[in-house]
Picture 1: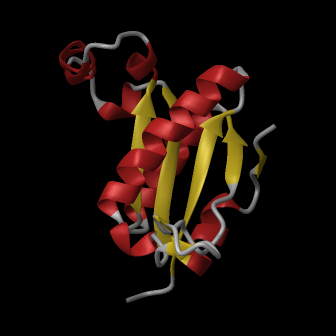
Picture 2: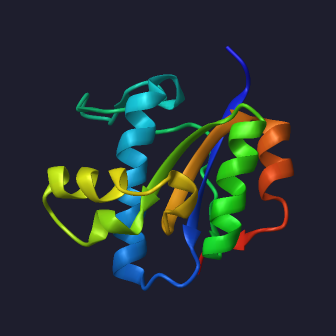
Length: 135
């Protein structure tokens, strides 16, 4: 397996609650798509077992909508895996309605709340080097 890393990039204008929601939604899909990123199970002193966590850091970075759209394109060009979260994902709790809403427009027109990218360490650095930490 390659030296895979991941980074999460959130829309810099999101308020904390919406940013947290976007990060959680993206992370669930990221873990499902890349189970190899999850570390070995954890155990405490009392032999209680807990699911493993990712053993490498996940930087959570900030970007504008324009930067997110450009990053999505660059990630695909550089053969990285991308998990995207369009804003329609926070306008309904009905997944079918969400799916139908985004089906009506090309993905290059989606307003992204965030994305996660998985790729080789050097590639990820190239893609995200100019982004600041989300705050």
